[in-house]
Structure formats: structure tokens, C-alpha cells
Image (cartoon, rainbow, N blue to C red; front, side, top):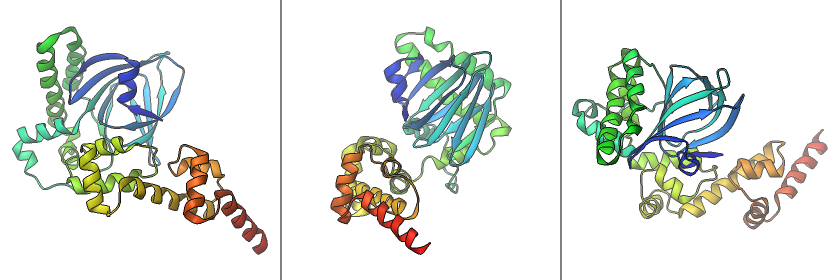
Length: 294
């Protein structure tokens, strides 16, 4: 699993600009075809410059061809598949912090005053107009600036992205999508934990996804669930593991990984402590019951 934008911070592709609330990356890939499971810790606006990208998310396939784009919510897990054109795939990626969305909504009081829309899908297909294409080309030139001028211009350009998208009639519901990103913190915490308890994330990553410091995350979590995050996550993962062992044919190793545990020996240890028997014994018991009933 690749965590974005953390992966790019380590491997340093062509970074156009980086600010506390946004980083812009020009990504290139020359392999014939490339697949990877990705997890977003920031919102992502992705525009394909050449080639094609397929995003598999919750049994839905999103095809993005050259000249098209997607906006994806932070916290999204997906399988990303890249298909280069003539051996070359390029995209322009905007990794956007919640604070930038909040700043934009504050500057647009009419939009911010609207009633929060119903829950939106985590992926929004973006139409790329000629005007937006010109904007993207101008963003690629920002890397030529240095110092404070670059930071100021980058901030203006990042805010302009939202305006460009909202001005396009084909993106008429993008305003609702932006508003949906600003759900209440309590709702965000609950949604994040229920959706991703079985993902191998650290408490720090859960805190970032819920727009909190680690200390605030722990405090708010205990208020909501009356349990520490570690104990609650472990119990939910063990309950899922027990269900998978009882009602599916998956191997113990597969169940371990599918439930959010990364170490098999640790999984066996905590499972036996919780239920009084090992995962393998559970699987054997289920198999024996099926054979007896057949």
C-alpha cells in the first residue's frame, strides 16, 4: 500500500510547489502498465496529461483519459492502475489539505452558507474545459519562481483551482462536493473509524484523517466510543477476523491481513488471548462442522 502524498515526499518526483496546505506534483511513469493500492491522507485533484488512469474504488471503476480529471476525498482507499500512451504517462496532482478547503469556503460566504448536502461519493469526475487546461499549464510554470513570491503565487493558484472548477457548468455540483468535505468533526471521526478500522494505519494517520492533533483525536475518540482508540480498533479487527474465519474459506494469513493486522504471529497471539483458541483452531472447527453436515 502506498500512502500519498507521503510517498512523493520521500521519493521526490518533479515537485512543482509545496506549501503547508497544498503540494503540487507532476508525476511521470514509463512502465507499460503499473498497479498499486493507494491511500490518500489529503484530498487529491488529479489531471491526466498523457496516457490513461483507472481507479478501482468500492467496486466502481473510474476511467480518466488524457485531458480529464478526478477529485478524490482524503481517506480514500483505491487500486490505481496506470496505462501509458506510447510508453509515457503524465499527470498533475494537487494534494489539498482540509484547511485550504475551509479557507476557500470562508472567502465564499454564499457557498458556505448553504445547507450541508447529503453524503457524497468519495470520487468526483471533473470536466476539464479549455480555460481549466490553460490554468493547469500555468501551474506547471510556477516551479520557475523562488522564495516568497513563489509561495504567494502558489497560494493564489491553488485557490484559483476551486474557482475554475466551479465556473464550469459541467462541474455544477462540485460546490456540493466541496461542502461535503466540511462535515462536522464528530461525524468525520465516526465515519473515518467505521470505514477504516481494518486498515493498517497508525493513530497519527487516523488523527490526520479526522483533522485533529493526536492528543485531540485520542480525547474526542474516548468521548465518542468510551474506549481508547487502540483497544477499540483491536476489538473491531478481532471481531472481523472471527467472522471471516467462521463464515468464509479464507486462509488464516489472508484473514490476518484483511482484518488490519500486519504481523501473523501477533495476530495469532491477540486472537487466542481474546477468544481462548487460535485462528487455525477456529478454521478447523468450522471445516469439521461442514464435513459433519455434508
